[in-house]
Length: 242
Image (cartoon, rainbow, N blue to C red):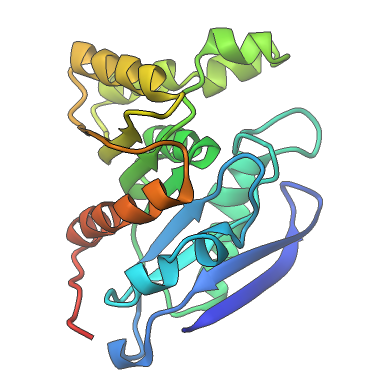
């Protein structure tokens, strides 16, 4: 197991932040390595994927750096004042990771669960220059209407509406490899189905998968491997046999 704890000052958040990184096994050599940013859900933190899940085991075959930041209950969104979590991930964190590890130039991958799944989908669609592969598990799908009901300003709701982000990506003609999945017993299943139908309607190519299961770590641990395989294919790396 190769884990690192990153602690640095984020200009976007105006404070010190802590992240967990899963580093490639020594057998993968010195790099440079592509990066996967793996986001946690609401109520979780930067340790969730390695403490409650088995991400370390699933990631071990890949020459890949996996970075798990802490997003509190932000929705991975920019909000007024110092709550700029989108800028934290896309700017501050990416710069610190590149300065700390032997990172391969070029786009990264991004994924997550629940709040982090929705965040990964939105950040990937908004920043296709930064993320070539995107996968959300049991994603919280936020529309502008939902964001306004939760107190977002009109500008915030427009910027963070996942449906609008998908439409803008199609119009721009720049879309990452995008996939998402959800358990059929998950309370978020209908929102995921609706977003899948929306993407079909606007002609945005994507993968959508439903499996038995609910909003649990057992479900996410069972399906993160599929996400890693997609990321590896897109990033041009291969798993070894260990």
